Length: 247
Length: 315
Ligand SMILES: [Zn+2]
Image (cartoon, rainbow over all chains, first blue to last red; front, side, top):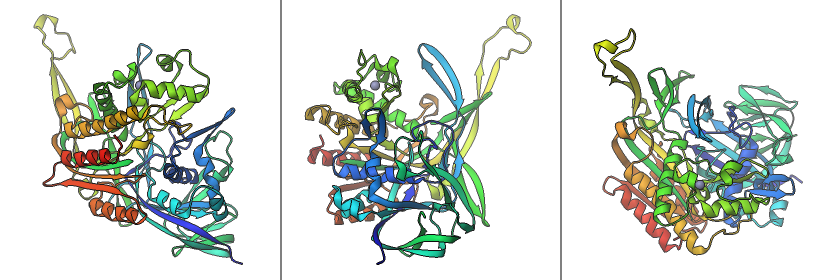
């Protein structure tokens, strides 16, 4: 039997700036150029929780704190993203003057962001493969997931407002292959890749969201345009486009 | 209820968002605008305003509106110093001794300050307590189709010092020249407000305040936005560089759950937003969408949104 799974394909337009901190919730100077999977999960978790009136952001379990997005991650088999247009990391130098504890202080800093703004149209398309079994056991329906997808407001922190321009749903078939052409990010492990792209080390969302101090990381390949991948692949087709899944 | 507003405004010779100063030159914030030419990326720098700057302005208006409605605002926020209970020193002004339970910390902060309720905070001690902002703002960027016409130009200014010949020393000058880089563009930005987040715990999802106070706080949050847009009081250097121009268009969507209008940096943003809202209607959701272009003024569109929210029982 061929495994079939529900998918959500969400096309978004950025408002120009996407601020993705390499370490979430930190003002650290590094930023990511492409959207990591943890951000995709967090982005859909917020509108999904909104539907059920769940406002909780942080779960306190004795001494550990987790993001409530962690409770949503099991609804997904896999998440990935396609970026059209090449973002550029940019952060102006800022002189910050503060009055703190009676003293005036001055510091120079920079908060780089991925700039997705130019004559071409930048679009970000996220694909969520849904774990139907987990979904059926939880409080949400497929329709809730679809509404949540329309309700994604932000990718990352601060001024990273996006608008969802289209949501496609359907069933995807997962199969084995020895080669594939894809524009979507995939885990870079034991594959041979032909084409241009960027490698980015990201948190493996399957190991947990919210506490990243000791989180497992994976290296993802973010294609620029389309690339060909060879190896022992697990692939699926979503609305006419191929995704390479985790081995 | 969720509110999303797209704003287009024209600003000529503005210094709304200055960044670094190099000697006597103070620079406007700029962002790269990417142009593809023969397969190669070319970068043109255009003037911009950070979301952070707009958020600061919004919170200043929130302070005033909240105080006007008799709501509580903490001493730091009253001075427009938005430290947001970042550490023990600041939190102690609200609650002393500081409770151990993050729930009690959040309750104490939300009760004593509308700005931190609406604008969020991060108490970075043990245990850390964070509350996301109920409002979100994008950068204000030049509208894409005319971005290449946007300019950032230094303007020469001189400051004079009065001195008599006896006090004149070798290199002291009677004139001090300096440059202020000013921007001119048609800008667009997006502002979202999640009204359901106000006064509700980000840990337990339980309301922290009674229904009546929740309603007044939601109203204060709306009024602050209204005031910010209507008065054009956002950004820096308004005393001498008040931009010539004003708001040209607004598009306001009110939905039950999060939904973001297409950014007004795109020319098709109104038509696209309308089509996308139709899809929500298909999913069984009510909404209000109103735009002010041409005839209608921004205040009229915003008032429609306020009236709709009142009808829906938000306040
Ligand atoms: Zn405060």
